[in-house]
Image (tube, rainbow, N blue to C red; front, side, top):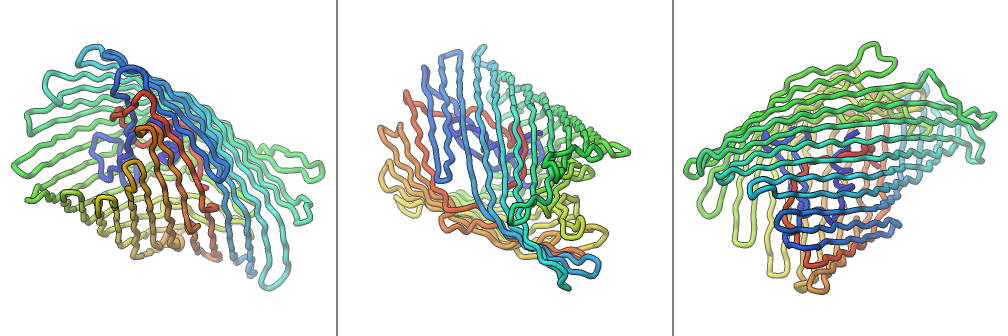
Length: 619
């Protein structure tokens, strides 16, 4: 299945990234997928002729290590590059969970604590070639192949008891899941520039896909080691995604411009699921055929967009409209009818700005977006997270639709920038993780469209120099949050006043020595089924450059005070849950970067949010 944006960032080698842009209300040119915007990854391309490149090595206190390199050759007609990466990331943590279920006039209590671990291993090779056919025509080829392994495990102690008292049990659960797969990504791009400045046509074909296999194992035993339960599930799958795209820009004159484009996305995925249980007498796993399942997922999205932008005195604007036709069918054994979506969606956008005196600007933006369910949200397969928790997807999920409005003010100072904006975001068909009683003291974790949520608030940001040696980026967010709808036959409405902030300080000790200190705080919030507690963390980093800045050593400490914990309360009919989990911190990390032959990058390509490999759940 396609890689989600978080994993995409994990996969792209550091040596190939020049900059990362966050666009909260992108124009109609971009895919409308995402709850609040897109991530643009600006990759590197060498400016100088000849051979040059960059090498990165890294490691941390959790025994993680990795590296990557990018080498390029450039002359007047060609620019070729070759790169590779290897990264072995490890993470450890802990979890606490308390469940209280009322079952047949008896309250069942389940308490657990234990350790968690995660390991992500990725390796890949990428290569590309840009050929300047003429001064106005460029043809580009690029490709990536690789392999990724993701493992997640836990070792948990459980205590069970009841009220009225009828039993008291202690047990141990060992759980591990792993997913391994190979992936590929190939891209062909052609660009033609006409005689008029800014007049151009760009077309591309991208094919990506791969195969993957997953195994989940859960074994429950007494504290003395006597096996009580064993369950195993396996999945084998293949996926492929073809994208064909064309973008055209026509400047009418210096003030007015028209843009238009087309894109087709053709996606196919299959999964073969098998479920096994342990025969306690022989300690062997036996396939339960009644739980086996096969599924197929096909989705075609055809899109067209048009944009018109112009200027009148101090007023500038951009109007856009994107139309998409989605044809999706999901089939799996056991379902009487396939899950089908045949839908036309319109995504209007508006961006406008008014220039004020003294480098000031007012702006108004609007964009409509869509958040399609991640593929594993839809998979109707039951997998055991541990002896008391089951996870299953919901093939009946429908996409979220987001209406995002912004009204803001910008001020540019000599060495600083200030912004203040108000916003309103409304999400229809809100998707949330849900938790219900499966049987007795076993909980079922799934996903549901719960209704609508609203976020209305203000956000402010300052980025500038405090002195010659100190620069600061600080932002704050305050908003009123409402989520309401219907869940499991009952209407609900939850509200909260949410707040958060970020701060990043950079101290220039010498021209080649910098220290960065940053922190983040995210306040508490309500959810459809309960509340989420606040969390915060802080990091510090030292960057030292050597040999005319060709060699750079960076030392970083993440989550200095070990405060980055996730904590939540969940309430439902006849049950309540509390959980807390987080990674072990602080984490100490060192990175060594070497630029050779005076390697200096410039902007090369924009990658819109996702790549192509595997999709995994959170730690």
